Length: 358
Image (cartoon, rainbow, N blue to C red):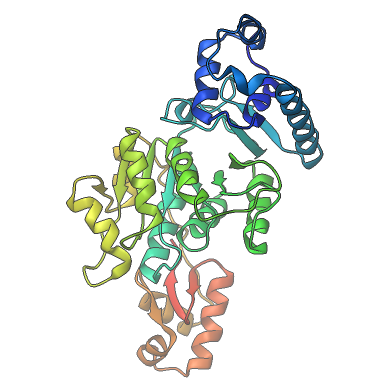
């Protein structure tokens, strides 16, 4: 018969029973009936934890948790569930129960995790966008942690490329903060993706939960890409988990003068990570083919639009410099650039910087 989610939850709700002990029980006994036989025979280690009303109380707590998740539209996947992600199942200390909001894609669809610092630079933003969009267009699922900075940029870029993305959070699925992250989570689910957690509804995020969350981000993925990270940094923890789990680890090299690239450069120097120089090379390494699309031929309404477009490239330029090089007033340059942005030809970055759209 196997283990039902209610029975696994019951074990998880038993006070004093560690996650490791629960995992050993799930591996040792084919189902809950065999486990109960061992209880009656008195042959189980830590038998004292199951005496008296402890097991009955755990069953009541598990039932209440199931009802709460049903009301919230949250699905539960136990480690013994056939739909539990296969790659994650085989990491050291996998989550015993995954709380899922949204939809998991078939196992054959590769997952690439893209992580990095919350306080990213313009360089980090552009790299995260380009690699995430390329992965999404190649058919990969982009996974990250829904935090501000690189995580959020990676999720948004995947959605912009009409791809699917997973977010792993360090709290209950009904406690996602801030409100901007909650709105992004809704978009992820609406577009066919998923938000996952190992924490039950009502649990607020604590600092200790984030490193634990990172092992899931790496465990779900075939490869992990670190875009920007200082030393220390949460993304480095994810990279170490990925390395220990036997995943492919990549890092985008950055300027040696940038604290935000100190972590990624260190990963490369210590041969933990392979340098990721272009999205095309990265995807080729993973055996993923990105469809080659011919960019549309741009059309311009005015000579000034054409001039501004050709002044732009892949590196961001400030509006003051663009206006100076085009020899037009700043307010006119902004008006032309806004029109180009409406047509999808350029993008505006924070601080009045502009780049061509990828």
